[in-house]
Amino acid sequence: MYTLIQLPYEMGALEPVISAQTLSFHHGKHLQAYVDNLNKLLPGSGFEGMALEEIVRKAPAGPVFNNAGQILNHNLYFTQFKAAGDVAQVPSGALAAQIQKQWGSLEAFKTEFEAKGVGLFGSGWVWLSADADGSLVITQEQGASNPVVKGLKPLLTFDVWEHAYYLDYQNRRAAHLSALWQIVDWKVVESRL
Ligand SMILES: [Fe+2]
Image (cartoon, rainbow, N blue to C red):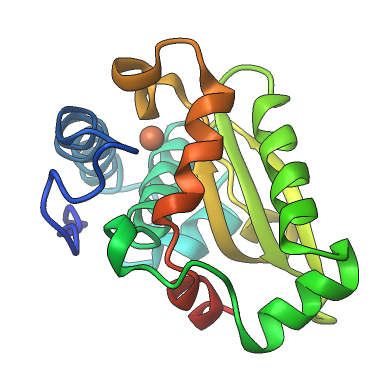
């Protein structure tokens, strides 16, 4: 059985970037539904007992992939944030050096990341991942997909499904994405490299 992850902060901790109301629905309703759905789908599916990443790599397009993918995506998403005053505001070490090498500056990286999030048609996720050779890549993943499908190691993601921002930002996806940097904990992102 898969279980709903506990958030490592209080519901109001990410305000005003993400309201307690949005977080409560996003975690307690949307993510809970994906967990419940996957638990119902697994018996007899051949995917019982597998780690989420393995299911996402192996499952064909369909309900098992979609629900496992959304749990994996949201687990990485929710655990990369902290209250704005508690986060490491900039990356350091190898991650900072690689961003500098490929984009020239953190600001240039953020600009491309946000643009790819804004430009993703419909529902999905924008990701920063690492390739096998250590280079970084920004990808757009439709629906429930995750960069592990492409053999990449996922590091950072912004959820561009409307449920992630509609209560707080309505249709202003770009404003939401640019605000999210305030709560990204770069220490967590680095730890995934
Ligand atoms: Fe979401």
